[in-house]
Amino acid sequence: MNGPKLSACALALALSVFSSGVAAAQSPWDAVLAKPPPAAHASDFRGKANAVFLDGEDWRGRPTRFFAWYALPDGASATNRCPGVVLVHGGEGTAFDWWVRMWNERGYAAIAMDTCGATPIKEGNGWRRHEWSGPSGWGGFDQVDEPAKDQWTYHAVADVVLAHSFLRSLPEVDPARIGITGISWGGYLTCIASSVDHRFDWAAPVYGCGFYADGSWWTKRLAEMGAKGTEWLRRWDASVYLPDARCPFLFVSGEDDPFFRLEMLKKSAALVKGPVSWDLRKTMVHSQEAGAAPESIRAFADHWSLGKPLAW
Image (spheres, rainbow, N blue to C red):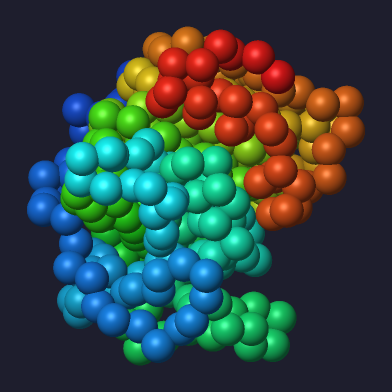
């Protein structure tokens, strides 16, 4: 590996400098936010939700698309618009139609997009990629030498923003009442996306947060990357963007989570300018299913999107 190796302490010090005010004014996604809703292309996948490919950002000079499931709740119409939610899967996951339908049953329109150029077909230990794919996940640590807009975090956040724009464009959906929740790596993406996309009504990251140099699962790897690890933190750590987070946040996690330490969550929450709520459990399994299950997320959404009392 080229460049000097940095200790975890040195990485944390570098991150504290880099995260001291760089926010949406310098967001790499400003141009994505300025775009009209992405075009939707038909898909042959069948599930309980609608399957589409949406236009993404160019990667290595060619157009991309990303796969998504979306659906509306019963009774939604242009004259009876419903709230909505954007669903961001975690590591080793993809877009899940069951997650969309779970929110539909609560009265929300929902969209779940894949952030790694894959489709909902199991292939080996992962998911089958498609011909319009952008960069693969997770984290893009091995992509740090590439142009910023060819790296995974840029494309993953862009996919979230574009999926949000698509959901907002549906006449049955109230664009003023759309939140976002994501799990693990999806929680990390939720922190960034809701910080740079101020159209979100609320955000609920599960497990994921910023401060990857502060004793996370990836701190050792970042230290071994030396100067490249510092560059990844400077460009992609969620703490760089969280100082411009304005919507209400709910942080959900287990106090003993092995990937995102409690101290990382607390430091991330301290950067948020909007109101912050917590659902911290003594123990919580780290998984897609466990991360989607807490009733606190739906109660939080109901409070900010429907005006119901905030309680769980």
